[in-house]
Image (cartoon, rainbow, N blue to C red; front, side):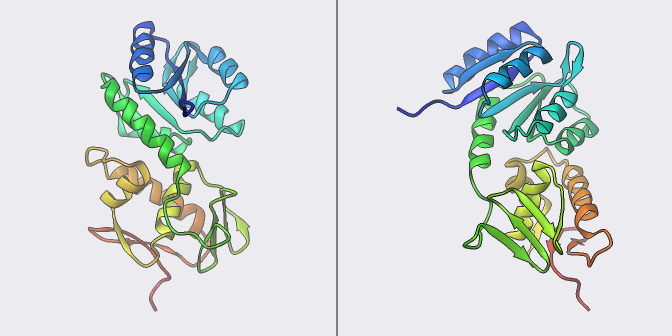
Length: 233
């Protein structure tokens, strides 16, 4: 028998915790629960799950702060935010801090289960063809999928997990013009209800880190999307 994937649900509402426990067990997960930040950190110290569901509003803390602490400890498992906050600024902040998905309350437990399975598949898979050494290269840019590192001109570029996936998708199709919809589907695996600003913010962050003071590689194709290519002369 295959060992079920483990999900840690960090949620202070007892009713939602019970609902998630029942629904996610039915969906095939081994479910662990935490009602606040200390319980979450204790659970993580004992066992690293395959995926985390993290409420933003927690007693005595903020889910965004919890995520920062998780990532600072080197825990790279996918994180899905579950929250009543639906402002685009909150979504973008969550992704910038290293979150992988964002679901607002009220929500469908069936959808949450499907998204968690998709996050796990994505975290274990590769977004594009790699060289024999597991490295994608274009111009002076290198992405090592095995070591999860990025270098440009020999300099290390520090990226969030979502920025890394975005760059990997662009690098897997150099010279191609990729629409915002294609990027949303490939990097986040669903459409944010037309919130193309999510893509725009992440491309802007990625461009700032990769292209600042260097030959620009990420280009905007007005009205369509983006392309990774050397500038035409």
